[in-house]
Image (cartoon, rainbow, N blue to C red; front, top):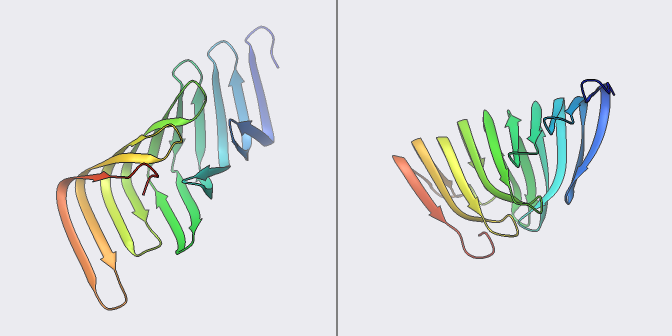
Length: 173
């Protein structure tokens, strides 16, 4: 820790905990004056989404305390559901946090892909998701080259458009 600059750095493995989530990364830099934590590479976060254990990977993560936001580069997640694995990825994402540390909104860009265990998937250039107090999705907007695909054992259905809106129930389904 450099007392003159207020910056602490570590080049090795770093373990962290935030709200109800925990994880590790390679390398970190914390600027106490700016309230910025940069997890430099190989970020792995274990958390719970929609009452299911979820693992999030990113090539880099930045937490901005004053903005209450987390910026993720190349995020991808995997979650185990009763039907199988659900996964998603994007080129980058921004998570807006509530004062209690829970996620309120997620904005993702650059090759957004989500694949549900039931065979449904969506791809788009941009995604904006509003979350409830339990960080469960309530509404998702997909923009730019939206492609929905449904794969079932006997048929496959696909549709596309410039924009799509998906509404969820109170449980995020």
